[in-house]
Image (cartoon, rainbow, N blue to C red):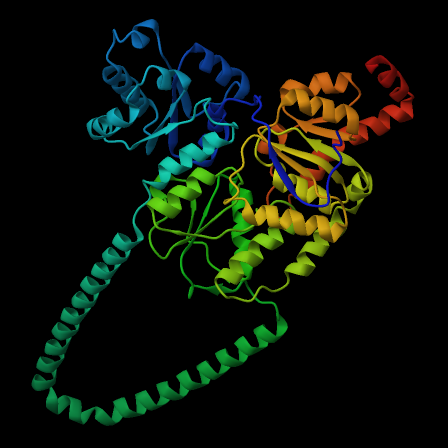
Length: 515
């Protein structure tokens, strides 16, 4: 049976067992991005051991997450869940006083049927702190979908833009009424003054006329000088500042990114005159963006299909289907798609992309002509494969634990276009791949690099296949123009290591030992 890539994009499903992290690992990056939050993971000691090992922090750090361990009395219903959770949440409020407490349900809470959604509103009213329930358990296909569950739950807590607009209208109406009454009072005072001192005003009218004439001349000359200086400044700086145009519908971006990366993407859109109304999640829970009809939303991570569905169906937002801003090609396509939806011109993106490609030419020389095989782990596989094909690599197979074809439709179309532009065969996409069959295909194809989960890395290395942990791309900064170099740094590290081993004469020893 031939396993070579075909000339058309082919998507298969093998329904195999998947090997990935537990989705509760999303706490590792979410608690850092939502600064006023506290995450409470409700599970067993196994979950606690996983958090201790996977979410290791510095000895002096005090992370904003904790573990509520279920004991035998909890599982056998000998203890009251509500009282125990209330005691823990009151302790969290006393020690940390967060703006929101996020309950992370685990596999155990699913098995024993804990009614977290039923207890949360009661407890929220008792302690006075919002409680968001997210079930990030092992039923998900990939560990990154834990973030998807949390953001989908938080989307229900975002304020309504209709209510916000009505409140702003009331405030503006109240302000206008206050100003009108103040103007009437000022008018009455002026009338009294005029009646009492009419003679004095007549006597001094000629002085006021001279004063106003001189003031008008001075103001006219000042305005003329200011206009000249503005024209000089514009001619001296033809680019000027970022264009800001608020004459477009509200735009909310969803996906958890470090603050530096989210700021970069916001600035890229501002350069095109597009204002970002907010991010989901926001740095602070109290600053969640307003959602509703007329609000456009666009995702930055390919694993947020549940959040996209919630925003589309529950909050009545309009979803912008765009490739994801990974790599210079993906970032350019992402910005151009948003501009096209708002019918705004997109300027300077081609030069911006070309400058990034020139800046990473030293890495491109290492990867051109090399082959790569994705076993599937974190749902970034489609976007990373598209970027590496644009870098000159050949992708044999893209394994992915789960794929929402509607949410990734633009990315799949962009992958096909990239393969045609680079004149390379279309890779095979395998959803829920069977690892045994994947190993057989890897042995036959002998790729230069396999991007895989941690469970298969060492066995493949022992068989002479260079590997890279896919989880490293999850925790690295890979979005936007400026972070393209970081992606290539991760990809080329095993290739550069092999070159160093060959220089030392160890490559033949490694291959012989693998046989």
